[in-house]
Image: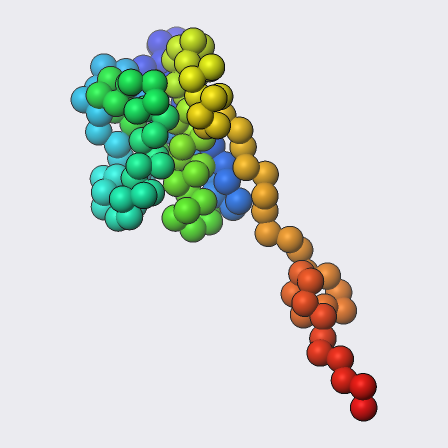
Length: 132
C-alpha cells in the first residue's frame, strides 16, 4: 500500500461540488477541471475568493492544487472550492483552524433554492388574483 501524495477534501455550495487535492512541495499552480484558474474563473473577484484561504494562512506557493468541480454556477463553484481548500489546509496543519474559522472559511453556506409549491407559479409567487 503506497503513501498518499496529496491531501483531498470536498467543498459544496448550492448545487456545486468541488473535489480539491493539495499536492505538497509544489509551486502554487491551481488547475480547475484541467484548466488554469484564470481561464476557468475569468472574474478577478472569483479568483481572489478561491485563493483567500491560502493567503490567510500564508501558504500560497507551497501547494500545487488540482480541483474537479461540477454543478451550479461560477459563484457557487468558487465558494465550494474555497471551502474545499480550507478543509484540506486544516488536514495539512490543524493549527490553521483558528485563522480559517475567524475568517469564516470553514462554515458551509447551507442556503439552497426553495422548492416550488403546488398551486403557485414558483416557490412563493401565487397566481394573479382578479376580483371579477
